[in-house]
Length: 222
Image (cartoon, rainbow, N blue to C red; front, side, top):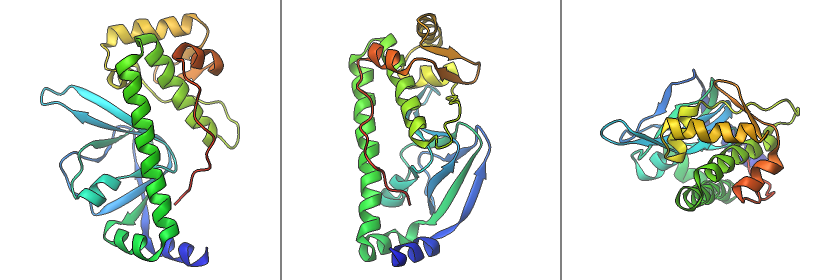
């Protein structure tokens, strides 16, 4: 709708570029902005006092970044750039205006938040009930499928992960993670490229994970 497009244009304050490894948002801090990811990859994580890290979820283009801080007032997780990325920057203090004056956009924001919750439910199920091999197969097939939905040019997909990222996502030691990923590679399902992974057989990977894949729902873009 034209009025929604005009509001989004005024809601946007600019764009921000971040290099790989940059921390976009930090746990315990307040942010004056809300973001959407335009290009690149990022991840959400929490750390324990001794530095151990748990990666909670991965952020791909179109995903919201910082909504928790915008609503609650303080970030309860951190966000780091997994690759060079570009963020669209919005004014956090106009979020009430969005929900009050533009219910369609408000629904889109709520839909995106609900989608993140559904993904977290699936990740929690994987951590709690899948074996190490199944967990790794689920994670890589999940990220590959998400990438496929964004790959308009049908280019070759390389998931920009290190084995340490996989270990921190699956709650495994780096040694256990390495052995698990080698098993998947030995089955001809994935190819490890150092700081990236290429899925060779998505159907086979999903079969190992016991996962039926993402449902095909049309997602809103803000």
